[in-house]
Length: 341
Ligand code: CP3
Image 1 (cartoon, helix red, strand yellow):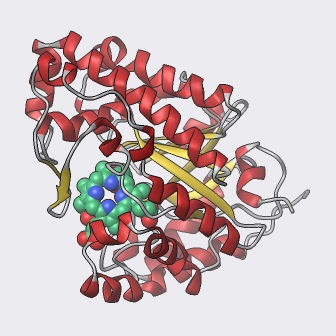
Image 2 (cartoon, rainbow, N blue to C red):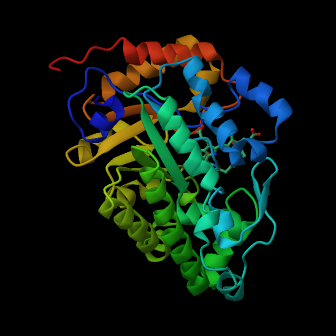
């Protein structure tokens, strides 16, 4: 059976646009909050059965067109000997601050490359309707490095930017290791049943364009090329980086996913002949209630050509989002009939 989400990735005609939501298996769901009373986040994310259950939770409420496996961008990093906790964001036991720290990382241990995520993908695929797409994901090398060097999520990542400026070779060595590991990880996810993968570059925007070109592009390019050669459809997401949008648009991928700061209709006009686009309602709009959500959804649908458009938010759905807002978004997307298909 054909999957709407995959048809949209290929920019084929669709009867309506596909919809999924970043962080759709998270804290806005009452069942997730119940589970979190019993289990820590790490416990949920490292147990294949629990992770499968959480991945499927949103489908009790909403008929999304894609499921994204419940895991974290940090999940594969034990394969490089990296230890971390969540507090509530990632907190790394030993931050990487020197070339010696990078060199001391052990060679990748495939057995520790998130076997629980791979198992959760297999279980989820078996439980999902055939028409629902399954998405794998990873953090982009730079966004992973942000946590590894800084040690935790810190506004604008000054320690990371200092490391990039003072020790570009060490940064490059770190990004090379991360890029190779993430390529392997995404291909394994596809082999386990993921129909497409999203690469989250959440902290792309802290660098200026010339520094991004020099330090980051080569590694992201290698990751995307390797996954592309394996035939896995790639969704490339960048957050808070409108100044890098055109640079990202020149990278090899099937889907350009942007946050609400980017004019997605203009992005589609420039690149729609070769790329699908994904996004980009401001997640805060949903906090404003069902009417505000409906208005934002209708405006998005009116502006963006339906062919090659995957509806999503511009970043993860916020805790505290009313379920009625999500229902209003689903209703808006489902009530559209696309002429000519
Ligand atoms: O979309 C989904 O439902 C899949 C699950 C998912 C999680 N993390 C679960 C999670 C995905 C795709 C991620 C990716 C992720 N993790 C990113 C990239 C996307 C983005 O948001 O920019 C980043 C930067 C992280 C790192 C991370 N993990 C942070 C900053 C935090 C704390 C802040 C927050 O959002 O809570 C986490 C913890 C985390 N990862 C939670 C969830 C559901 C919250 C844990 C909890 O239940 O308390």
